[in-house]
Image (cartoon, rainbow, N blue to C red):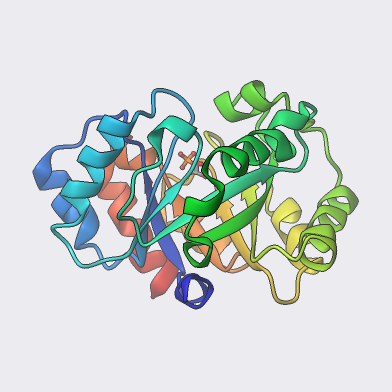
Length: 230
Ligand code: 1GP
């Protein structure tokens, strides 16, 4: 079951279908001992570039899930599908609107056992995702704990995602999120560029997500795996 699979993930790489990655570098990523690959991004995600990346990742054995950001780019064949609900978005479209449209459109065809919702809180105001969703990023630790409690107790979502995309986050905010959770799995992603940063976030979050660093400094990105998993 998808929830059980995710429960064991300590480290994942997030790969963006829009960005270029050589076969040699993809091999290093997939054989790095990371627990899984999340395919996702905010802009320029198409069916073609998503199916192409999935096909290349499928040469390796590790799990690969799609974080859905564009209805037109939902490709069959992933091990699972993560659906973000951006809780601090001020545009309701990103809280529940786009998801409602998707279910209306694809209803009977959705393999629900392969789908998990993610309660997302976006915290880097400069990030593309914050601007797209018009997220309210000026949050306190109390705000974070309350969002986390809502995700687990009220919405009953399996994943809470602290998203600092593009910048290294405030660990106190991640700790505040953790305080609100008991069963729900905590993802941290954003700005990890070194083993030290990855290890620090892994001490609080259940899963650490490394994205951009793969494209900017692959050697450093690869070192985050051991830092998180020991
Ligand atoms: C983005 O949380 C991920 O959705 C990872 O962030 O690209 O900044 O590592 P970075």
